Image (cartoon, rainbow, N blue to C red):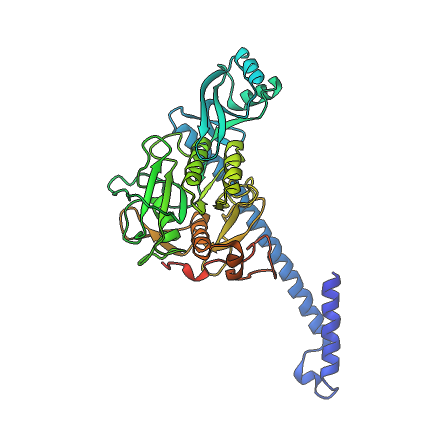
Amino acid sequence: MIRFMSLKLALAVLAAAACGPGVQAQLVPPVGDILDTVDRLGNDALRDVRRTADETGRAARRLVRQRLSRLRRHVRRSGGALEMSADGPAVRGEILALDAGEEGLVRAREAGFRLLSEERIEGLDIAYVRLGIPEGLSVDEAGALLEMLGLGGEAAPDHIYFTSGTASLAIAAQSALAGGTVSRPAIGIVDGGVARHPSLSGGVEQRGFARGAPIASEHGTAVASLAAGRGAIDGGAPGVALLVADIYGNDPAGGSASAVARAIGWMAQRRVPVVTLSIAGPANPLVGEAVRRARARGILFVAAVGNDGPAAPSSYPASFPGVIAVTGVDRRNRVLPEAGRAAHLDYAAPGADMRAASARGGARRVRGTSFAAPLVAGRLAALGSRARLDAEAQDLGERGPDDVYGRGLICGNCRNSD
């Protein structure tokens, strides 16, 4: 009300000051009419704000429902390989224990847990064990029991991470897998497999971290082209070499936290300077530790904030400390309504009204924060530092860093328009 009263007063003063008594009626309506108009405009604006807020709220709730429905459907289609945990799908009947103490493991075995394997993440010196849970317990119940038993370290389900874009992860059965060995990969990609494509001229080396991997996928191919494509599809760093970790393959439990962590270990072994992850999931401690140790070795991580909307839980790995979190915008630089959120936001980049490479050749339309992240990763690899990336960012929205665009828009002119 104070704002509208101030506007009324200002208009009245301007009307009185600008016009003499003889000409006022010819140039402006009476002050009373002005105030009535301002009242109507104010009420209309309030109605518009309320309508927009209601529509935004409905859209957010719809995205949350769609997310839960999609996760449950994924579990049903896994053929028993997965179950729902409090944080989403996870490998059925297993718990990952990081830095578990010997005494804690003894107590766990006495309580019915089985030691399935002792594993190590090569390149990061991370040791963990995989425990089979007692009959009749869910992964969440098993985790709570291990905490009560004083296992030590951190224990969590082997969570599943999902891609953050509309391009399908489905295997491109008739597409040839991009192959070869690269000596100095500039960008690492943790995603699905990448198909051979004319735009990927800089070399692609791939390795599988799930059953059947690596296998060419639409999503992985699109992400690769936006990171390093040259020609019909231009990426953020045209023509650079890629190291691709396929964490999905044809595995019903593909995209697991353990697969992501092992893929990051491979990136660390190969000393890849920049790694992009167009995946989203919960704050799994094994993935978090892999990211932390790889960052300590100098790797810069870029991750998409996901496509489950602003009402969804914060997405990881984008929310891990030090990871560069990226949202997507359309051709008008509006943030995608489906864009998720992270504990922090660093940049925005094109994520809609654009094309990327198709695993079947040519190009296809893509949409989602998945396709914004590789553009930022490409520019980071090309520029070589965060400081130079900041200098290239186009400030949008509020002046300076904000929670809508982060530090600004990266690669705004990189959109392969559809």
